[in-house]
Length: 260
Image 1 (cartoon, rainbow, N blue to C red):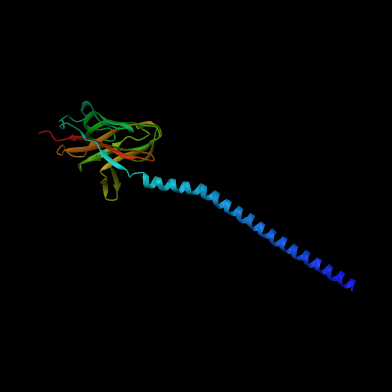
Image 2 (image 1 turned 135 degrees about the vertical axis):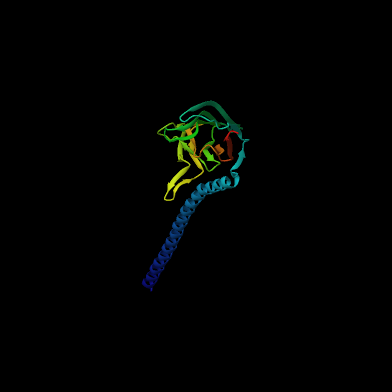
């Protein structure tokens, strides 16, 4: 009988040990799961801490930065009646026209220095056409933290004139600016002949707090001294940062009517 009780007690101890081991193992697994879930949520929390402010910042920029407004400065005009010269003659003009704009963010100026009127000039690009030779100069300063870009445009306002702008391999000089796009001649050759595009331009991005552009322009008259000619030289200057953006348009109108 004692032997039987000893066997029974031994079996009970074994069962108790197995149950206890089972509980310990189960608790260990729960602890491992807790650690695993804890690590997982820590990673999620870190991602949220990094991502949420970036998302909110991007949203605030999109919602807080206003659209680009446009300010058009009063045009400055210049006029000269078309002179009557002998072929190959030159009339020296030497006049400068300027348009300016300034505010809390920028100080900008565009000027046109009108050099000469030529009659039946044989030099390229006139090739026995009349016209005007002038230089254009753009200067701009922006405050620290503001980026800028600009376009200088030459629009022919009649059907009988052509504009040709000197490119980088001629008279185009930039300071703290990089050309992004340009059309140097206001017409193009197609299968149907010459097509008047009506505009030549140079687009550039500023790479410093001060930038400038200077080039020479030939404005050619494709008629027999019977048409009035008009040209608009326009600087479109845009500055922007995270809180403000503004486009400034500064036109200069050149008018060469037929003398009466």
